[in-house]
Length: 133
Image 1 (tube, rainbow, N blue to C red):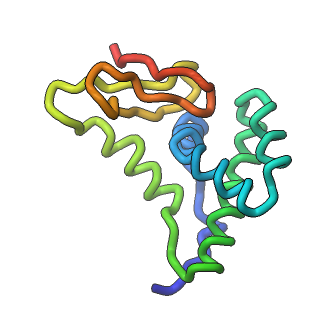
Image 2 (image 1 turned 90 degrees about the horizontal axis):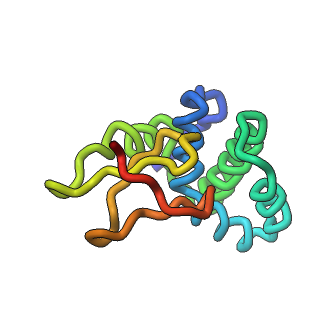
């Protein structure tokens, strides 16, 4: 597969972008430690999740994806693909299983429990997600 430059790709609205960051948070943390950028990651983590900081998270994510594309010659998921997976495709889950939403109402992420009765976790806010009502 060839690499594509997606730096000019428009980002979704903030709530959708926060959903992508939230979902990919564990990957971002692992990448930060693997590439000796843990200090930068922790600095982002210490900041409030406001739209101005979102730009820094997006840049951090893009840097991670670019480096992985360079290292592996693999096209990683774009913002629009991640949005499609996180927002549009997330209403479908096991029949009868509850849909959960952001505990801070900051992002548009939707998720299903990994195990029945176990609420999905939001690493970004470090709290369980809320049942969608």
